[in-house]
Length: 284
Image 1: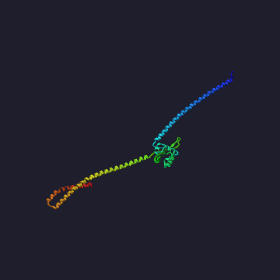
Image 2: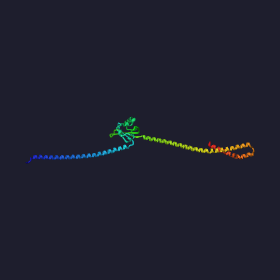
Image 3: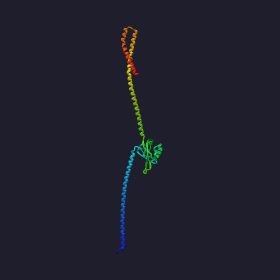
Image 4: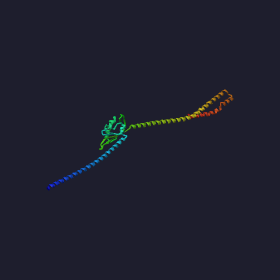
């Protein structure tokens, strides 16, 4: 039986439509696959970038942590309400407090009686461009306190607004002890110098006295020697005079004159007297 031409054409048209639909569906799937490949490639690219950013962020955090840990000065970071956000290792070492115990605490808790003053100064500083510089006692975990020379500068966020402050402090207790030791050493040195100077003065005075004593000793010795000689001469002259009074014979007097060496005495009297006078003048 021969099919009617109209029906045949209709069936052929339907078949062509089905084929075209299948081709369009296949193209759509191919396009979807291409888009999925592109999306996956983008995801892989974003994942690589994210990992790189995370690595850079971790390196930056490690660098900042290393810098903070290496600081010898005390560091305190606070927000605009004076709440402690972070402290460094130097702060823990000086005060004995752990960073975890202080995070979120008011800044005033560290200053005891000076808390109100510190709070007032902190708030005033946040509203000005000046650099706060002061010396204040900070409390430690063991109940003691240590003096710190502190300065405070404002901290800004990414938008340029004041977000808080960074406080840096340096313990001055050790510096004071060093100055005290230096002062004591200087005082000891001055005392030693005075003692040395006094010793030198005494030594100089001793040398001077020894020299004067030596200068005095010579003429005094001469005077003493002369006095002893004159004393002997006086005894002989006395004996001669007594002989004169008792015996007026010229022979006896002549004999006594020789025996007592009156002529020698008369010759030696003048030099002895002159030498004694000269010695007396030298020591007078």
